[in-house]
Amino acid sequence: MRLGALEAGGTKMVCAIGNENGEIFERATFPTLTPEETVPPMVEFFKQHQVDALGIACFGPIDPDVNSKTYGYILRTPKIPWRDYDFVGAFKEALNVPIGFDTDVNGSLLGEVYFGAAKGLSDAVYYTIGTGVGAGIMVNGALLHGMQHAEAGHILMRQEAGDDFQGCCPSHGHCFEGMAAGPAIEARWGKKGVELADRQEVWELESRYIAQGLVATICLLSPKVIILGGGVMMQEQLFPLIRKEVTRLLNNYLDTKELRDMDHYIVPAACGGDQGILGCLKLAEFSL
Ligand code: ADP
Ligand code: ZN
Image (cartoon, rainbow, N blue to C red; front, side, top):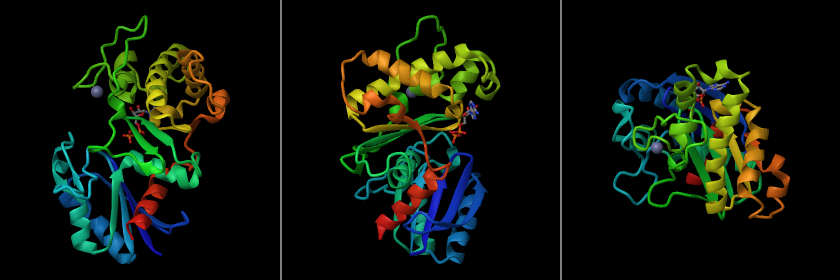
């Protein structure tokens, strides 16, 4: 099978050709400009390679409900040229092949479930902590959609002692994303995260907010593993701090074999950055 994969991000679109075993043969990247500028070269790429199916994992909010009138659309995104855009429709019309469509984070989670840190598991969560915060969620072997898709980046947070930053989510102020995404770090400390690498207090505080979000996630969804990706998680010193704080916050309330082995419970992505593309290949396969 020749499968097409498209990881659609706010700054770039990563396209690839591969198969259901996660082998990737070809790649191309296009900057995210407007649909009129960005979609035709991607269509051309997939046409050239004669794909049998296409999997798209896209920044949100999106409509992933196949029974909805706006299935396959990008919805009320702040990226204005893409708002209310029929993304799946554009590829369907041009390529006429089956298309799988989901959120970027559900795509990354799917990649990790088949090829990475959540291999073989049917209950797992993938968080990206980057420009925003979002989570892909699998429960009982199915990616969670519910009424649209999860918005785990907007879990409300309580202010940590000694932090007077009000948060930068335009809708909620101090939600997970408003307190802990890359832009929140920059707004709070006046520098980008990458320039704050040696400031212990930055990552101590960051880990406390991330831990709040993860404890809510653990209590609600009971995942068997939590994978953390995205630019902010390039700060590897966060992992031990987050594990310790999650353990402290749970305060022995839960006692499971997974939680007793924190080093293997809260983990980095294991697909070397390809989790999104690998997930798209699976979305393509499942659309056939
Ligand atoms: P996006 O979320 O836009 O897809 P990223 O996951 O790379 O992209 O996230 C970008 C955010 O992560 C920015 O706010 C940036 O400052 C932050 N970031 C990127 N690299 C690092 C790093 N090495 N350390 C800390 N923060 C980083
Ligand atoms: Zn919010």
